[in-house]
Image (cartoon, rainbow, N blue to C red; front, top):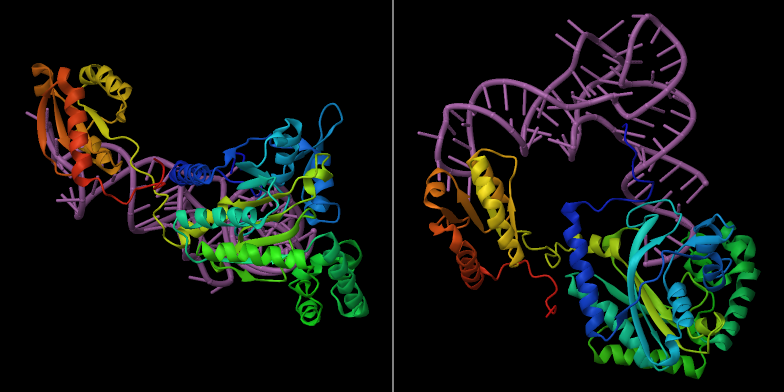
Length: 439
RNA sequence: GUGAAUGUAGCUCAGCUGGUUAGAGCGUCUGCCUGUGGAGCAGAAGGCCGGGGGUUCAAGUCCCCUCAUUCACCCCA
C-alpha cells in the first residue's frame, strides 16, 4: 500500500454511509429542537487545564487518553475528550448564565488516545445536551427523556436505562469512607489496578470487571444505604417523572461515571448489541462544575451519546429510519455531444428551480445511461437524441413505469415539475422518511 | 499499555506440507445490440500477495521487525 492510510482509530465516512450520518444529525437537531435546546459549537481543542481541572487527575481520560501538545507559543493544548467542560467554559466566557434556565445541545468529534475496538475509536463523535440552572428532578428527567427519545427516534429498541445516585458531597463522602474501610481490609485480595485505585479514586473500583474484585464487591457497602434524605428523594422523584412519561428505569448502584464532576444522579443507556462497549449514552448531574470552573454556583445536568455506537445499533436493529432518499430525481440523457450542449442549460434551469438533476457526461451508450440512472434512484429520465433534436423536444421517461412522453424543450421545466408532483401523490409513501417531525 | 486473530484484485475470499507466468465469485469496462434498464454469451482491464529485513537454488507460503484491521482486557460514548 503506497498511499497513506487514515491514522489508527480514525475512519472516513464514505458517501455510502454519509447519508446515515446526515440523517442522524438532522434527527439530533430535530429532537433537541423539540425539547427546547439550542445548539452551541465550541472549538475542537482547548487549553489543557479545562479538562484536567474538571474531569479530574486520577481518571483514565486525563492520565493517559488525552491528545495533548504544545503549540508554537508553548501553550498546552488538548483535543477535547468530551464536551461538557468546553461548553461550561464557553457559557462562562460569554455570560450565558445571565438568563436561566439555559438549555444547550452540541454534536461533533471527540478524541481519546485508546486502543480501538468495536464501538471505540480515537476520533469518535458525540452529541449531547446540557441543562443549567434547574436543581429540581424535572431537569434530570427531561434530559434522560430526551436521550431515550432520540434512541427510539432512530429505530433502536433493544436498550435499557440504568440509573443511580452518587450522592451529594456529604453522603458520598460517608459512603466513600465506608467503602475504603471495607476494601482496605481486603486490599491483599484486590487486583493490582484496584489496589492502586484505593488511594486515588476508590469509587472507580465499583466498576471493576475482575472476578476476584467482583466477589469482594458483592459484600461491599452500597451507596443506596448512605443516601441522605435529599438525595434519596431526588432520585425517587426523577424515577417517578420518568415513569409518568412511560420510560422504565432500573436502579444500578454500581454505576460510577468516568468523570469526577458528577453529583447525585448518574445514568447510562446500554445495549447488549454493542459487544463489550455496551454504553451508548451516559450522563448525570454536575451541581458543582460551574462553580469549580470559576462561575456562579449553578446546578447542571447533561448527557452524551456516542454516534458511532448509535449507528451500530441502528444497523443491528435493521432500522430504516436513517435511510436517505434518492439524491436526484431527474437523469439527463444525451446521445450526441450536441445533445449534451443543448441539455446543459435545461438541466441548470431544473436545478435552479429546486429539482435535483444530473447528467452522465462520460457514458456514451443509451442503455448504460438509462441503467445507471434507474439504479441511482432517479425517477425520471430526460432523453434527447436524433428525433428530439430536430423537433426541439425531449423524451421524458418515468423510470419506474417506463412510460414516455414527448415534451417541447421550452416546456420541460413545468412538465417535469408536474410529473414529479403527480409521482409524489401516488407512490410517495416509501420507507425513506427521515426525521418524522422535521416539519 | 496487555493479549489473541487477521492483512492476497474495487468487494468477499481460495492458494494444501515453500516449486513455472497469482486464482474464483461479485462488481467495472467492451462487444453480440444504429435509440432504452432484466437475463444470457464472448472478451478485457484491474495485484510491489500491507511494508522492511532474513532463511533458501527457490518465499504469497517459513523466521524476525514494523504498520494496520478486528476482538477482548483496561476504560468509556
